[in-house]
Image 1 (cartoon, chains in turn brown, red):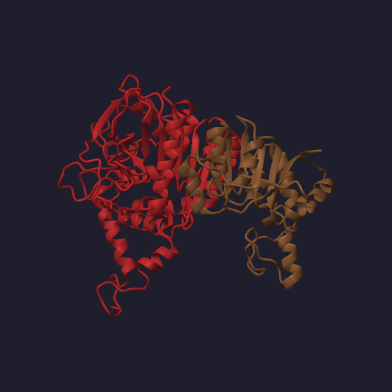
Image 2: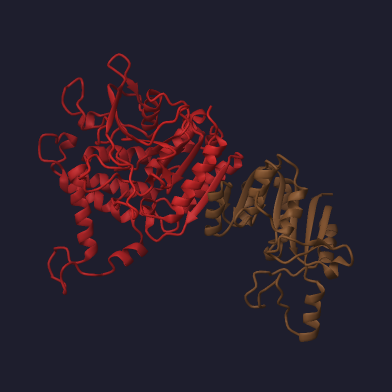
Length: 202
Length: 391
């Protein structure tokens, strides 16, 4: 059993055994492989980058090379129990239709994203007057793929407006590649680096 | 497909292999074809490498393309100049590892490399069939391969693997014999030819049939339609390459000269290359086989034959796990055609993986050394063999 990144451990703990799982932007397939080996899930992944697709298939993960927004369209309704979009939502042009698609093909969906209202980001903007650059969001304004900046609070407001219901949530504090982290309960919108949400229909 | 094969870098090989023959369907029980005609006897030339395990669960059937043969890997004799056509992929420790898998490759029906085809003797006239040979289809090829697999006592193939026209046979296997196929790998392939692909095949066929030596196909024992076949092959080679690969391989470089000749000989390297490929091909291939196989490829339409025009319905019969691979620069069987099959598989909730490999070498890329394809193939087969204990 290989060690899983902390945020992925949280997601994995929410997935029931033998579930059918779709991983959107599944990278090199670490989470799907862990779920396949430890939760006996039936896995499918979608990943844009050829080299990562090769890594997934090498591991025995079923994955399609392509864009998550278009590749999700062909799946039948409720083909999955869970659709997971880990740390990609902030890069999606149309998050509403993506989440709607996720909830069409799956019963529940998991989304996670870096929290833009973390105190370090807030203080950078306030003290330096420049667009923040952090370990979680390491790009300059001109080369960032993270076109949607949102906070945990933003996302909760959004789910209410869009008519999704939050079934579970976790505000965590971890660095991107750390295997360890902790749940943030005190002022999460200020102190959590990432938010993870399990979403269902209202 | 072209002939780029060479011994691979590390020199490992399955060693010596032997071409074998399986004959079935006699005069009383001829092999009926999709066209309504029937033939018999039918001989299928095949080769195997690796060892079939006790429960016969490790067989991988490799399906060759238009001009290929059963000689997939290894050598017939130690002194052979070249190994089989996919020696870079098939062998100990390679993408299709013969230490783990039992590899079968047979020459397709209608070809001229040992299996029954237009150059085979017609039992009625005792002369070559020539164009009296009935039209065959991809389905007929696969049904004859199924007879061979039955003969070998294998009830379920771990994988069927093939590129180009071989990929069509892979898809046909999955639809026709879903219980016999655990996994399938169509490479640089399609569910049906585009008008563009049919157009190139038709020009190639016309060039053979316009050769005065073709004699309506009855040229055996006489001068063969070599010029027509060579030109057909040259046309094929253009479609196997790409603008980029031709620019890299030849550019506008001249062949053995420093200035234009102002004559109609081959000035440019690309001209000389095509002529060389054409002349090499006529030594080993039968013009009538070329006509029959290209026609079978043009006729192939998985949706029409198995789904009343719906690809989704056609794939609803299948149960295999799929790995679909296309190449960025392949304009003969472009990526959108692979994606079409992937979409139909997804709509059926099938287990499918898809990868578009970045490669500049056009359609031929699937035959060239490619570390990524090796990794994909090895990983995919490993996961299938672990997920598929003996039946």
